[in-house]
Image 1 (tube, rainbow, N blue to C red):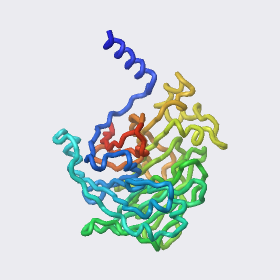
Image 2 (cartoon, helix red, strand yellow):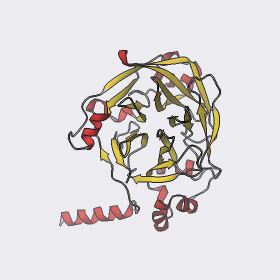
Image 3 (cartoon, rainbow, N blue to C red):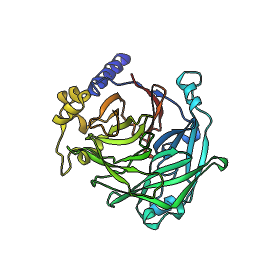
Image 4 (cartoon, helix red, strand yellow):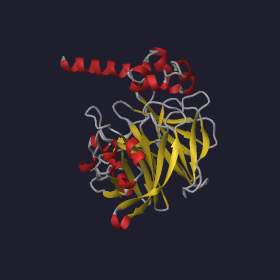
Length: 347
């Protein structure tokens, strides 16, 4: 009797959630010591056969913003081949990783410390690490740092003298430049702002790695919901995480310039049409996660690659892997969420 009731409840719960097809991801259990919700993974990239994970606050967070830059800050790396063994079922979890200490954060200008809201993106090019800093959303600029990857000493040595300011194109709650990647053909870094929901799209920057030239402004095609990370192929095709948290509804879909965009969303994101047809308020109660792509940075229309489960998972990191991508969550130091590294195949 109880089993029957449970099965009926589970079936009802399934019908009340997503009515669109989702790609199933494979969980890649992280080593226990770096799997806690306090890590708040906010960025990820692949370099020289290793996958690098960027915690937002380096496994610690204080109420005094500037103090967050004075404690130990570690970035972790995993052997890509070890991840493959878990994907293939040869191992059940990851056990080994390397820690890299980020140094010189305490030498950053005082204004960055005063505005600091954590690191959000990582990209590595020619042994140079690029890290984006999100700031208090009441301030005008976010920042991009460069650092030397010193593998001999397991360090990431920040250059506190050369910093690129990234002006917010639109003031939106808790939005920064969460998506940064290297464009091999363009030979520049691309940084996308998290919010690009306006009808004419948003704004990003092309950045010379020397940091000796001003960042060049580029248009970002219109995209509902947040773009939380982006990565590029050797041909500069872009893939991004497009994530929606229903708690952000009033900031992203009901702000002073956009009002209840459901009718437009049904056209822009066909995978949500059935859910919104059945329940016009669907997005006020449900999360949504997908991978999107641009054929090139000059393309004007995002295309959907795959949708996947967003419930309790604040997906913020992405790197291409095999015939799909690795994705990672920022668990927001919350007991209601979990830290997950996963492999998502592109069907």
